[in-house]
Length: 321
Ligand SMILES: C[S@@+](CC[C@H](N)C(=O)[O-])C[C@H]1O[C@@H](n2cnc3c(N)ncnc32)[C@H](O)[C@@H]1O
Ligand SMILES: [Zn+2]
Image: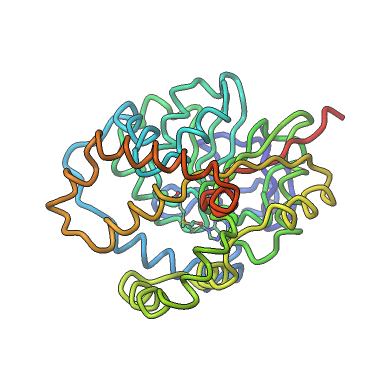
């Protein structure tokens, strides 16, 4: 695999030990050894929001966690979308995989156990990547796992580099979807595919946020903070399948979509925002979670509610050529 130097456009063989561009001398790694392929002026508001957020979430680590320990996250009762995403991914053995905007989400570290040829874990912010590296024991994966700051609009790898490009809760942070889709289609190998997860346009939920939940939503944004791009998306109400499909087809991809979670989403969101943490074992108990999930599935057979499911798992494939 090769990397394109953001400074001079030169192609260089990409290895975890690569330090600088042999053509222009640009250093590829920051002082903490994380690749940084983002130009400092790019997405500076969004990057500085997340740099601060991930600096604040840094923890003192005494014992590093193993990659095996993340598996239960794929089966979390509060996030049925996780399992759907995982099943959609299929076998990653021998594949080149790029994770975009992965922040400090750890469930994706499990992919390295699936023997990919190379897994690139990226985000706009280097700070997120530093946190992950500090928390996990990753020495044995040194040859096929790299951490790199990348702006998803300008993927710095040559055409046809990846079998799979993945982004969980990140595409809605991108202000230019046309540029993003063009960049992704180029970077995919023929027959390669993408998997994303974001919030869908759900009229009932959107209307509620614009009316009776409005002040509550503003309070929540004030308390926890919201990035500039997240705020823009939240006000727009979520992704509509038809809009995405048009853009994806124009870029040359074949789109697919799947929605899940209405009652489950609202229930766990309410629990997280309103209930004391010490009661979480009750609200997250297996029996209650199963009951909520089953009721959600039944309710979503009603067409009106079906169209209001909030989690959108989606993506596209690139034809074989
Ligand atoms: C809501 S967080 C999701 C993080 C992670 N995927 C997760 O599921 O927890 C959105 C992430 O997108 C990243 N992001 C925002 N703009 C980006 C861009 N232009 N390119 C790549 N990542 C970006 C942010 O740094 C942030 O980590
Ligand atoms: Zn260069």
